[in-house]
Length: 401
Image 1 (spheres, rainbow, N blue to C red):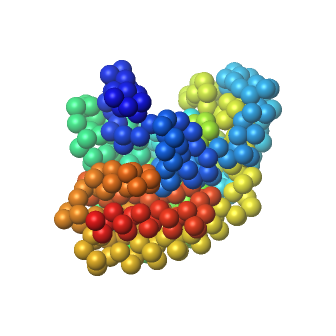
Image 2 (cartoon, rainbow, N blue to C red; image 1 turned 30 degrees about the vertical axis):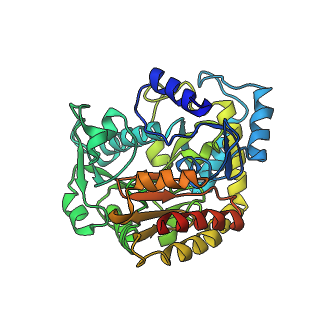
Image 3 (cartoon, helix red, strand yellow; image 1 turned 90 degrees about the horizontal axis):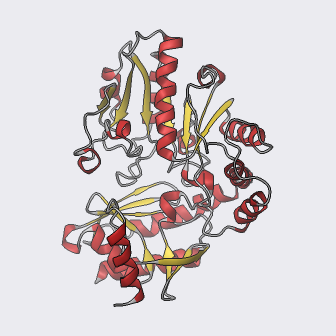
C-alpha cells in the first residue's frame, strides 16, 4: 500500500464520509500549485471553491496572519479589540454600505441573513408575527444547516434531515414572472446567488438581476445577494452583481474573505437593517476575532487595488474563449460562467464529471465535478496565463482520449 493509499484508508476509517474527495493527499501548496505527500505536483483549478482566490500561501496574507498571531488571536465579542473597527469600516466601505455583522462560515452568514431579514420584516415592514416568507431559487446552494437545506432542491442535501424549517418559497432561477407571483405582503426577502456556483456556474439571463432589484424595491422586499462564491474578485468585479449595475440591500460574504487562511464571513447592509440588532439577539464567539480581522483587512486592501479583478477579467476572457472552442467537438455540450469561473458540461459519451476529474488528476490537474456531468473551473486569480494554458492543454487531451 502506498503512502497515499494508507493516508486515505486512515481518513476513511476515522472520519465521517460526508465528502467524496479525489484520491490525492495534499502536503503543501503555493500559488496555483499543490504538492502531494509523495512529491507529485498538481495545478489547482478549483481554489477551494473560490476561498483561495489569492492563491495558496499568499505572502501578504500569511504575513498578516503571522503578525497577528504574535499579538492576540481571540477576545470573543465580550471585549473590543484593535482590529475590529477597521475591519467593519473597511468592509462596509468596500461594499458601499454602512454596517457589518461578522461570522465565520458562509452557512453562518446565510443563517444570519435569514434572521436579519425576518427581524426587519417584523419590526420595519410590519409583517405579522411568525408569518415572514423568504423567496429563494431552485438549484440554490447556500450551505447545509438544517434551516438552509429546508429550502434546497438538492435531494442529497435534504434527505433524512427533516422536519424542515418553514417560511421559504422556491421559484425557478432566472424566472422573473415566477418570482413576482411568489411575492406577497408577508415576503421579507428574496435570497439569490448572482451566479449559481454549485449548480454548475449558472449565469442568470441578462436583465434578470436588475429586474429583481426593481421588483423588490417596488414591493418593499429586501434583495439579499449571496456572493460567498461569486464575490471578491472571482467574476472580474468585486461583486458579481456589479456586472449588471445592481446593488442589493444585503451582501452575504465568505470564502475568499478569509484568504484561504482562516474562516471569515459577514453580512453587510444598511443601518436600517443591521441596526435592528440588540445585544444578545445574535452572535458568535469567534466571529470578528482579531486573527480573522487581520487577514480580512489584507484581503480588502488587495481588492481595493483592482489588480485581482482585472486579472480575473483578462484571464477569464481567455479561459472562456478556449473553452468555447471545445463545444461542438462531441465531448463538451455547454460552457457557462463569468470571469475566471466556468462550468463545463461533459457529454455522457465521454464520461461523468467525476471520471473526467479523476483523469485530469492523473494528468496533474485538480478540478471538481458537480451534478453528475459538470466540472467546475475556478483557478486562483494569481494563476499565470502559461499555467492556465498548461491546464487547458491537459483538459483537451483528456477530452480527446
